Length: 181
Ligand code: 5GP
Image (tube, rainbow, N blue to C red; front, side, top):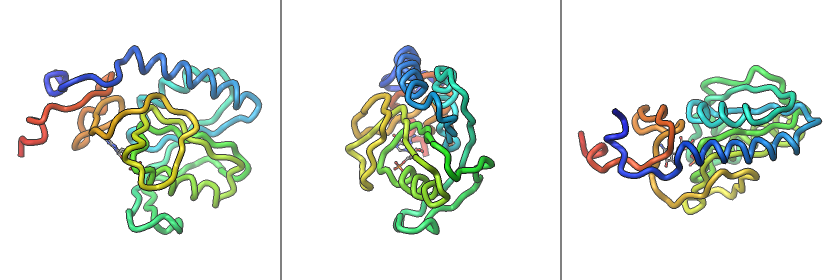
């Protein structure tokens, strides 16, 4: 039913599963003795983080944040509105932020700064998609699923007007969907 709105598939479900396996295995090796805290940024992280952590066969904790960043600046933690904060203690922890996509880098940057400010021992980023052409803030995710061109995509957590997050793949919408209003 949702498929009729998709112009083309960019990353198939099979590819996403391969990516989650590759990155999950790598993270599990690197964080084996660290009891990492995997932090997902709601809501887009949900499908990818779910698949990723099933491929990480090590002791870990998971937690979620829901943040809105104000695009005025990133110098202080005051630029971030926390709609839902972490329950877990951050101080001294090795943290892996799980994201659906890094575009401008602003969201990740404010969250990384906040977690470091709160005393995290280390903070790294794993993202299903990287859109480096959109970058405004200097951020290099350590673990990248696939690099995509500067194109608006939906699916596997990514929404258009809060819809399409449940698509099992990442794709581009048909223009008629945007031009409906
Ligand atoms: P950033 O702060 O890096 O610019 O943006 C990250 C957030 O912007 C993502 O978590 C996502 O919510 C949104 N975003 C960036 N690019 C896209 C895209 O191509 N499609 C969708 N649906 N959301 C995007």
